[in-house]
Image (cartoon, rainbow, N blue to C red):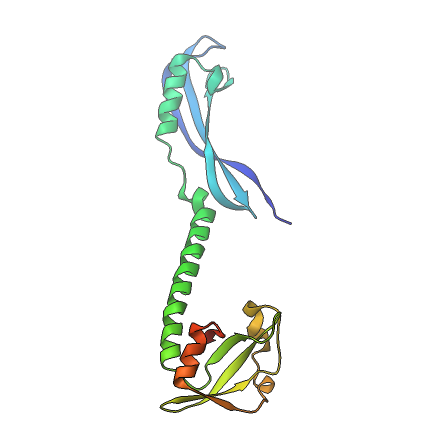
Length: 200
């Protein structure tokens, strides 16, 4: 269940003098308060939804929303609101999401560079992903590398999703007979998508 909603918080209060109150008709001090509103998911602020301003007459204690204020009070309230900055914390959820996306993109690009290196220079214990059947995936483990050949053993287990291959990557699953590929065949298998990925 996703918990989400909106919430408000007091940002700033400022006293302004010499403004006539519509209720008590006294030229007095008004306390102008600014409240910020934000949207949250799991109680983490995601983005701001604007600011609201309210004034209170210090003489009669009547409060006004902006639409109820006199022109003079509106001007003062707008000045206070304009000078009140939205807290950076109201964007914290969006910043976290942006950072995660940036990290995923960086990791993906870095992995592509690593794979290119692994294909060119295979090493013992590299794990190769491949499609073992129409619906399943499995892995091969490199056990020996020579100047012109790569030797592997197959994983005896299969799984329906490539992203879950780590679940079957256990030493006891590699009990099949070892077989060899020339280095050219090994590299060609990635080009033809017979081999899908390699991890080190």
